[in-house]
Every structure is written in C-alpha cells, then in structure tokens.
Image 1 (tube, rainbow, N blue to C red):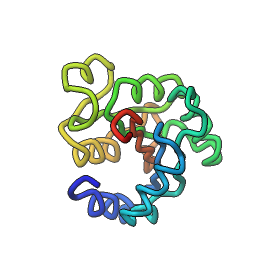
Image 2: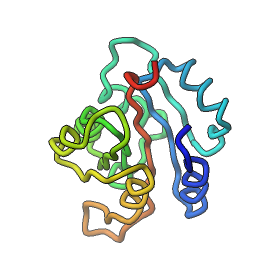
Image 3: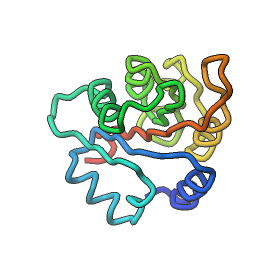
Length: 152
C-alpha cells in the first residue's frame, strides 16, 4: 500500500466522489491485496482480470457496464501507464496519469493526457478538472487503474 493512500481515499470519499478499482491483476489476488489493506471500503466496485488475455480497454468497458454505465463525461481513470490512457480514450473517459508507478515519466508524457507527480496530484486534478462539455461541472467518478505487471 502506498503511503498516504488511506487518507487520500478518505478525503476523496468525504468530498462526495465515488471510486472504483480496476486492475489487470488477477481478480482473486487483487481482492485479497485490497482487503488486506482495509481499503476495500472505499471502492464502490473492485474488478481484477478474469481472463489472462483481456486488454485494459475491454476490462474498462466491462467495469463501466458493471457500475451501471455512469455518465462517461464524469469518469476519470487515474493510472500509471500509457495503457491506462489508451483504455480511457477507447472508452470515452478522461485519464490522468501519475508518476511513481510502472512506466517512467518520459513514457507517460507520450500518452497525450495530463501527467502529474504522484497519486495525490492525480486525484486533485481529477476532481478539479472541468468536464469536457459546456454543462455545469459534476463530481467525477474515479476509476483507479492498476497495471498487472507491477503486482505479480
């Protein structure tokens, strides 16, 4: 568990945002890891990979459907790989990438989405960044993407 993760998740929930967790880590392993840290209480839904060859974009589509198809203008995927940004783009949701994960900053900058230093900054940008429409900004739903390659 990253230092400060519980405080960050609590702060986001306290502001009225919903959060879910999507990972390409095997589902049973992901659920075990999250339960062990007691962070499962913060997530509306937790989904790991069920099939080894499932691409992130397909997993995100299934995750969003399982959430009841939230307004995609309100969804922000916070991730740490260019694959997270590509999946978000394919599914019509915003992405914010953060450093400190699997891929180096130089690689993250090629994704064409905002890149910030660390998870706290990513969460702050996700909740403060206006939606992509002329409508009144709404509270985003936050999907945290995790890459399986870091969690084996």
